[in-house]
Image 1 (cartoon, one colour):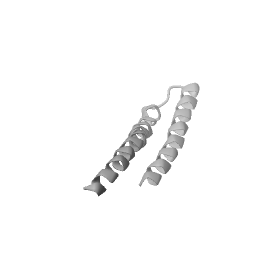
Image 2 (cartoon, helix red, strand yellow; image 1 turned 90 degrees about the vertical axis):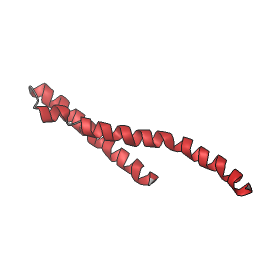
Image 3 (cartoon, one colour; image 1 turned 30 degrees about the horizontal axis):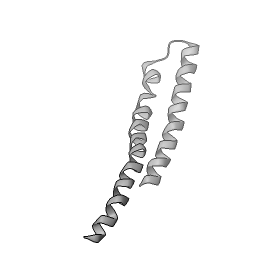
Image 4 (tube, helix red, strand yellow; image 1 turned 30 degrees about the vertical axis):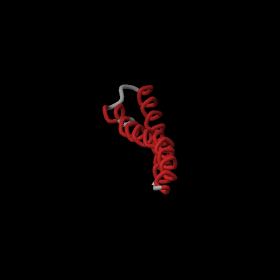
Length: 74
């Protein structure tokens, strides 16, 4: 599952960058439509959740490995 989340996070970052670039290009040409202005928000929120998941992973892994030897002794 971790590999899937990391790969999704990478692709979301590419999509987010593309939507931000499209937003800037549309603003340079004229007033962009609302769907172009708000299009980066969905990938941004998905990046937030996948990034937070990956941020928490090392802390949960440390808890599992620290707890495992104690459970074996009991």
